[in-house]
Length: 258
Image (tube, rainbow, N blue to C red; front, side, top):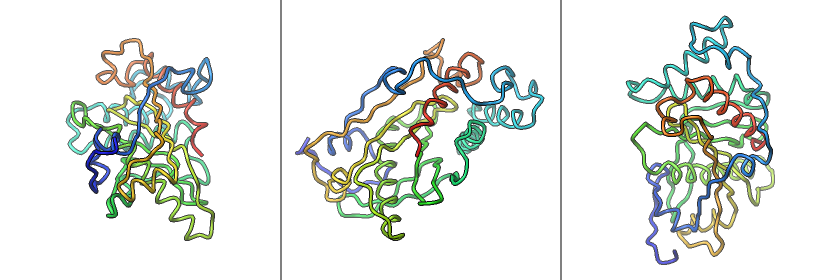
């Protein structure tokens, strides 16, 4: 709404108020609508990832490492949630998200201008394209029972990434992008939800100046359908049926990362 008070806030301070203030709407879609295909593709991971319940059941060392990171990310005693970041990195390697010229970063600081002031946003994990230094995927992690505004904070990180990407493009003599759909993932332990966040020059300008955009920004999201949806955060990717369903979503999400 145009009359909402806007102030300069870092990404981790964004709430639903900022989404209203900048005319940003969030809508959730089923898998065929969100991913644009049905059925979802089989995950391109080692077959052992789909059949080994625990790390000790794995023969391959790479699978052992991935499932060990999964177990650690499911432990509630991890005080800094660094295990979730470690698991995300291992998972991206296993799924083929990381290939030349891509690289992965954890806790990367993204600076952006909001209401005329410089603030920061810090995604837990991001993938960058080394050819352009563009951030092409964001991961926002959430402690179980903790953060109540993860969607707003992920969107702030996407806006910050877009600003950073264009600033780097200018410094490299490349043309700025007019718009970009920034793919993002929110992880609660090992349970993900997936988002496509359209960011435009008009939206960025309004955020910079603390103004209400005349046109809405529609962010779409998808929460994987699991056999026991009320236990998704407790079970995560530990059960094999959950694991297969979630990995299919990760596989289908690949095409949005560029």
